[in-house]
Length: 476
Image (cartoon, rainbow, N blue to C red; front, top):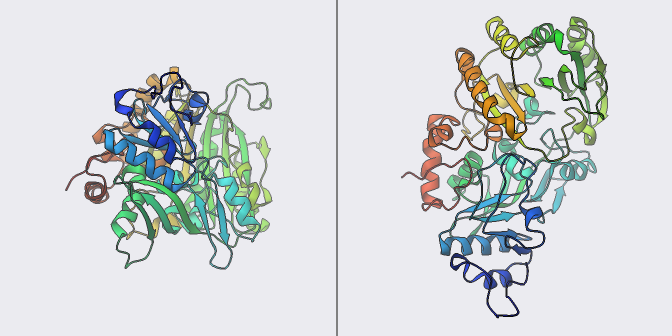
């Protein structure tokens, strides 16, 4: 709807809460859409279809000025504001709210001298990977090339390619632009003497709780190739593979970033026979190093059980998405995460019992991502991701809304059993859409991080305009 006025009556076909919509339409260069308008459903549709969205109005922002106009429109009417770039992480329903989509803000600009890149709020990772590769550089991107850069980074950003070598993506943010609840646009530089240090910290600690980021600048690394790929094993060998993986991670160099996934594949015609309808174990491997080092590190894994498929090889960095080979089509899924302090014989036995071939695990994917290395070396930066005493992030994924309820209850029981091995907090980007109870949100943070996040929230969004998220309530 760029034309909000009914030509027959001369009036705007809106509810009283949306009076003044024509002024918003006139102020926005992108799209302004209401329920029933052509394009409304597509504009509101996220990658993760677990939660449907029916906002009172959706603003397809094309610029920071569009975001400002939408925020001011909502604030003056007491409507909550939500933001979506790609919608990979499930979020609370935006029904009745003002939803701002940022996919049109897709500029990417690389500075090869400073080794930085500036991106618009709607940019996806593959665009950054490709632009950086032209200059022999690479970012700390996510596993899927379709994930939005901004949301991923504000949640910490756990890179499956170079995370243990270079840390969290949020550690390397150099600047950003953000619209706060008063409609102001701020440019923030990440430097110790910045007068806006609290606001920058709050964005990197609580995602969209204190504003809507319209542009982000961050560091790149001089990397052109990886030794990377995966090893697949039949699920019956899960115990042996997990044991070998525990040995690998116990002595892994920081240049090595890995994960292991226990996956129960549905019977799908496009999958190879060894995966379709099968339970399989997938070790993901990414090394900043040479073939000899890779082979030495992988030898125990390759020898612990028959390898069904081995794809580890030297690859151009721009092909790193093949390591995880994440799905590209939207689907409903729920993710839950717990952090583990250790990988001991006791935790190994619990993992095999809970998630292995003889378990009653209802989850489609159970993934263990190794932390440590550079991910644990910035204790003075207590961002949302800064769980420096955790050794692993255990992520449970369930696909399909029908399974979500029973699987969530089962996962709660599994996580309670893992409590002796657990670390406090969780990984912000893998919190489920409905884990929005204040105590659920509080548990996602370290205590001192959460207290500071509440103070920043009280300063920049005291009316809690940005609350359709994993909401940090404002506290002075």
